[in-house]
Length: 84
Figure (cartoon, rainbow, N blue to C red):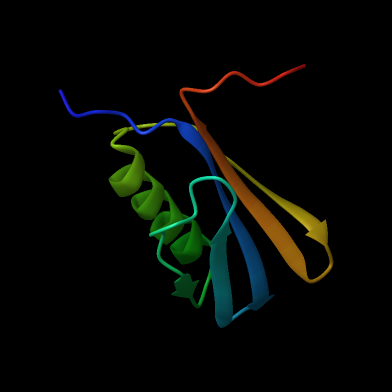
């Protein structure tokens, strides 16, 4: 069984349809690739693959929410506890 790299994996998403870009930030951002895609579905798939590879976790849940009209946030918490 592979080692799981715990943490909160975050990407800031900017751009517009046809030219979307996601940049990793936060505690585990080092070594995370920048992701680009033409559609949000393609971008989410690229970010999911990047988190899967770095974290070592095969499946996980994530959220992807619009925070301003020009930016969204992708977050995946791998084996961490969220405060309620």
